[in-house]
Length: 275
Image (tube, rainbow, N blue to C red):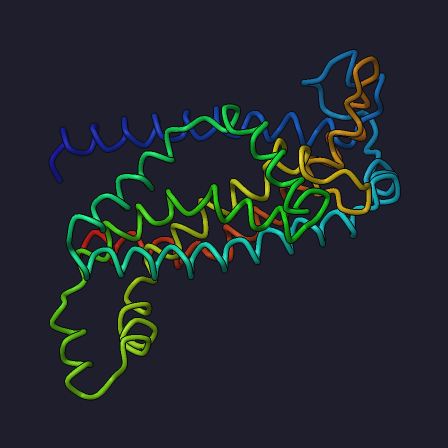
C-alpha cells in the first residue's frame, strides 16, 4: 500500500473524528443536563451528574401532557408529508412532461416563493387564516404547511423527474395505461430516492417548527412538542432541568426516524448519483 495514501487516509479519518466529536458536544450537554437538578446545571453545566435524576422525565411527561403533544406533532408531520409528496410530485411531473411557457412561468413562481421570508407574509397569513377559519386548528395548520412546503419539494422533484426516461412512460401508454396509472405505477416508484430526501427535509422542518404553530394554535390541547417545551422557558424563569428533559423527549422520535431510514437514505443517494 502506498505510504502517502495511508498517511492521507489517516489524516482524513482523524479530521472526521474531531469534527464528529465537535458535533456531538451539544448532544452531550443536553443529555447530561437533562438528568441534573437545576442547581447543578447552574454550578457547572459541563460536569458529569452527581446523581441521575430521571424523575425529570416523569415530571415533564405529566406537566406538558407529552403523549398529547407527541400525537399532535405526529399527526401534523405525517399528514403534511403525505400531502407534500403527492401534490409536489404530481405537479412537478406535469410541468416537466408538458413543456411550454405556462409550465416555465409556474415553475419560476414556485421557485421564487422559496426566497420570500416567512416574516413578510406572517401578518397577511394570519388575517387570511382567520377569515377562512384555519386558525386554532390542526387541519388549518396542515394546509398552511402545504403552501409553504410545496415550492422546495416541487423544485427537488422537478429536477429529478428530468432524469426519468420518457420512453418508459410512452411504453406504458402504448400498453393501455391511463395517465393516472402511468404516474402512480411507473413514474412514482422511480422517484423513491428523491421522495426519501423530500420526506427527511420536511420532517425536520415540520417536527421542529415553532413559529407557525405558535401563531396558529392557541389551545393548550393542540400544542406540538416545540410549543410544549417552550413553556419551561418563560420571560423571567427558565426551568433548564425540565426544558432539557423535554427537549430530549422531543428529538428522540426524529433520531429513531433517521436510524430507521438510514439504509434507505444511503440507497437513495447512491441511486441518485447513478442516475
